[in-house]
Length: 232
Image (cartoon, rainbow, N blue to C red; front, side):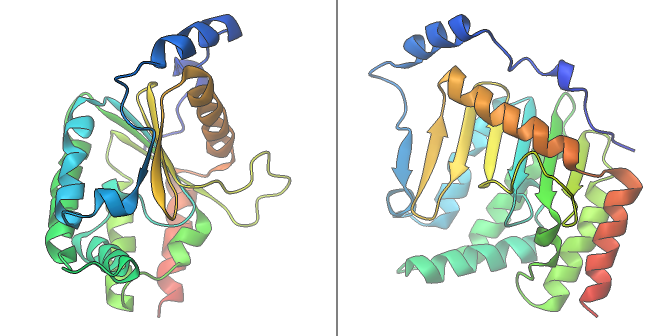
């Protein structure tokens, strides 16, 4: 059963002087845009947007994802992903709804979770398990898949219980950490890419505090089953 990883195994903690030096290095004219509006990213459709992340996934060894809203994309079923992306297409009033094809691309992109040499630490708030996306059948299938995927040897899946007392961290915006070099933050209007080491360190600190509050293994599975029973 995957267990919480040892915080000392992370390399994201650096001295203030090292961070300041690294921050200067990362401020280059050729750096990728740190703030990109979703409308700009979606003008060619949702399917292409899914595929643009594939190279980043292919080169990342350690994935850390914190989500307070949805099941992380790496663990989404095709049905759940299609429902999520269909809502996006409707909200954005896209001229073409390619959510079904985009969902297939998202699932294909998630193949990395079965590849050797990769590690995945995925955290969700318990409310994610009860936020029904799609119909009851779609949500049930997603929760059943979580029970299976959380058993994968490369996956550490944690749930922050809703009754956690005296939380050191309140629920945060959804963010993804790729190795120790990039944080991707999802806003309503845009995606923000954080690369400055001092800022990345703050996200790693928040992630560690959230991770320390989560339950894993049997306790996490109990919360998933509870959410399944609530659908009936």
